[in-house]
Image (cartoon, rainbow, N blue to C red; front, side):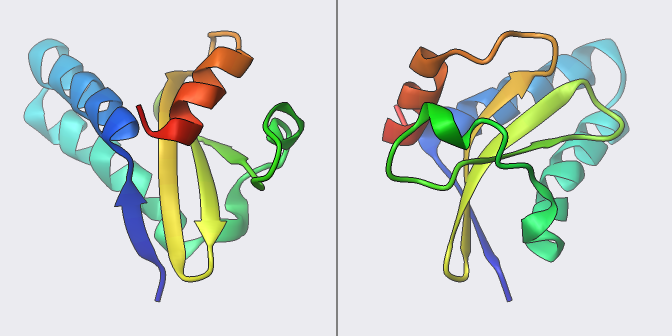
Length: 105
């Protein structure tokens, strides 16, 4: 079984997005967003290694949420899936974002 960990950096991003959906949609939509983040524990290999070249030393994966305009950046470390960052799908992926995500800051 894969265990899900969310770094403090990513946790604050998830909370911000969920709060936005509570305010502008409904608590049910916010709950579906959080549940979508858990999808990766059942399908850890679903993400792409597209941005892995931007960070050295880790096999960074990204996965776009299907019903939300966000993507998750994560690593799989044995039986631990660690979400490093959540970012809007239309934003450019910058090395500085990924470095912050890597540090968990």
